[in-house]
Image (cartoon, rainbow, N blue to C red; front, side):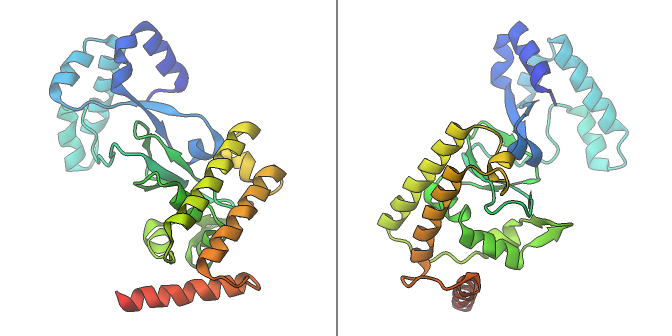
Length: 254
């Protein structure tokens, strides 16, 4: 793992190494900015090439020594191949990325789309798609209500889970027109984030959220509400009632 400074210094001296690196984000990086970098080695031939660089050779040797001391047999066996990632889950596709835990100070869960070149840790939830309408739906108040109702909690923070939250979230039948409308507003939200600047954590903290961003999310909420039913919802309890009704229909049909 390389810090941003370590990566910059290494690439400045050896620009030909750049294709072997991937930006790496964990949940905190996703929310607060910053990143680290990892070497993605595909085979032994690339490993032999990279070992010619003293700094990389030193890093590979450290990995090998660390693995050799492990109490796990599989990890010790991987000491012979320090370039190989033990549990390799990286899929080279664009993703919708979400932190695994979200502060109760968020009225909306900060999510974004990450390019396929970026790798993430296991505390970042991934949906292997870059569909803007789906990002919009997951960024809605309706989805936040579902998280609060069935998601877990870590102290006062909400815990998101692909199994308990994402896979169970009831999605109504959506026309192409509705999806396009949701995608349009999501693009405007992404543009506003860039215009306002700052980290996702500061943009979505309820005390510091820019009013322009909040209003755009409220516009999106109206579109999402109408996707679930045409009459206006009377309350969040009314919304949850609709969600659980859809969930029952969804699980009964299965």
